[in-house]
Amino acid sequence: MLSEDLQIYRDTYELCRLLFVYQNDVPRSARYGEYGRAVSMSLEALDLIYVANSDVMRRPAALTRFLQILGGIRSRVRLFGELRYLSIRRVVNLSFLAEKIGKQATGWRNSSHGVSRGVKCNTGEPNP
Image (tube, rainbow, N blue to C red; front, side, top):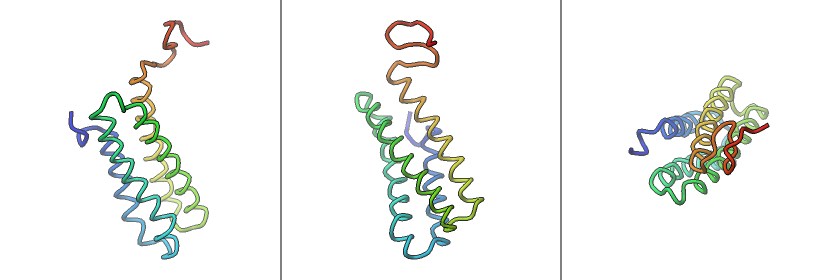
């Protein structure tokens, strides 16, 4: 399956697109600083989806890095909202999308490790 056909890719692409669209409302000092970093991080996250989809051996590491980057984006979005660089509506849109992406990535990473909900990986017994 092509990376572009994956829901996680489409959602991450939408996150990137929204970050680009919203950057015009951010003050110039932040736009070329931390906001620009958030945009770059979102593009790196897209690249990591390609890696995870094409290389099974590197998938867990790529998805772990993807989740780290996503956490950084979420922190920055929250900060931009608190500083009133972005409206509450835009912060909510970005946060909701980032949470949705995070759940998809976590599930993908766990399934690539052989971990499923409620089952320990090596014993097959339910978790307490």
